[in-house]
Image 1 (tube, rainbow, N blue to C red):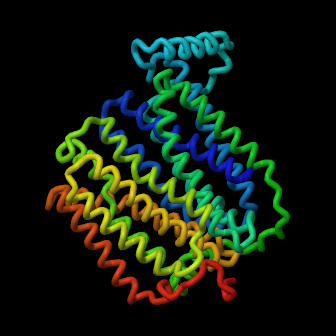
Image 2: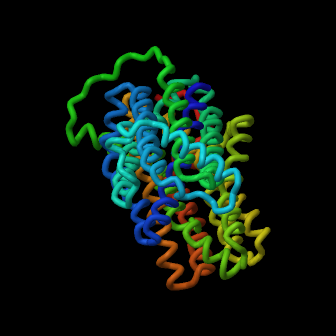
Image 3: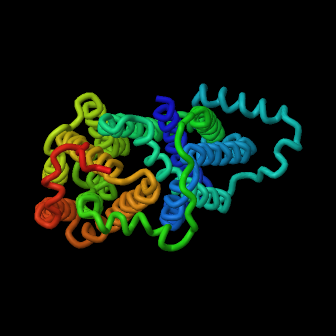
Length: 429
């Protein structure tokens, strides 16, 4: 539970940090281009460093890697807090009495400190935010493989499906609650958000630092291209893992509609930004509920077929969403898409961990992270291109149909997936 709480606090702080970074960049520059650069500057280093980070997770103590990543997040939050308190009005909601009082407290506190405290903390600028975005991407690259490969070491093998679902529930809760909490606190000023992020990151760091595992030291290996890319070769040689990961990649690229939700909200469903916010949170709510249920009642039989059918269900739901035209039905269908996606996530991640020996889990988890990141980024690009050709409805309809066809094709190309009966099999390493 200590690791679960650490992930919950750390991820919530990370989500708040990402919201504040984007919002503050837009307030400083008013440029949509700069807002897009924040995301790009996070994605590119995460992509470049993920494979070396996976190799590090197999050579160094994973608990220490996660602790250092949370400590780095804490440092970035403190740095941003120190820069933002020198601009006390930034991000404060006009006319909000509570926000004014909180911001006034921070102003009084910071002005009481001697000037040397702020030496080396420049006022927040566009360049600072872009530089910190690069650091966020690097930290994420190292944290994800080490964090994912820790779970099988914390629970018995037969409890891993429940543990994966329970862990996913915490992540989904942080993904849903982190941005909302960050947006709420932002009314009191950007410095308040960064201070809250620092506190949450500190709690996560302390919890991870106190985690004690009686493990054999990792086997020392020379750093070569062969060892760095060993996770890629491992997956390519195992049809079950290759099929599950590539299926998720294709479904994410073809079936996603997140990038087009503003078009659906404004032009088709005709709702305001608050309605758009509910649409964006609906899949996460469905995923959160499903992960809680799977933690209580884990999948036990025909898990491979359920993985494939969940992708089929995801494609069908997205086609129904494209044809809906009704706001409430659309929100319900998006929640159902989160249900189908979470079944896919829990089965896939559990199989990846079970089928991978511990000495390879860091590198395999790194490849898994690349697949997830690529599906999200390429999916947004694909949605934009096809929407420009066929409109948002045509784009989502075609993507949903393609997802169903891909699942049917993968059923024939990777029969080992459909044949997989139980999560834990006696032949698993």
